[in-house]
Length: 204
Image (cartoon, helix red, strand yellow):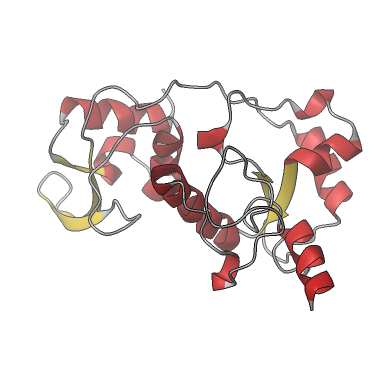
């Protein structure tokens, strides 16, 4: 059983109550496991806008731990299977993007993360990189630092709930459309950081 499956099982057993993520997943990085459940469409109580984690004492493990409260046994939208990116495909993708962060254009010195341009919650099905040309890889993916990928995840989650596209780095510019989500992510800086920078430079 994966860490994600372990945490989901623990949350379902305790649905409607705060559950220790450490005990539930036996993972030292419960936030990463939690994000997978969010992508699957499960609904959790928010302690603040776009924040679902609550630190409190866990009597089972005897420490202050991250807790989450699952609100429903069933996801809000259909589960989609993820297609694993193999080691060889990952190497290929990193080479295509030259280890450059899409949001800043700077070289990534930490471990780069391969990001779907269209967020998981908006996709009908996953994209199989093995079937794509290099140009199609560029159309569907971008590279981000860990920090930037987390920021994008929060922004896209907010957009999914409100249909309002948050501005990238608080710069109110969309190269197509505006702040209102109208069936496409194209034009949003979070969707394509490199194209967003290119179009913004044309403006200035």
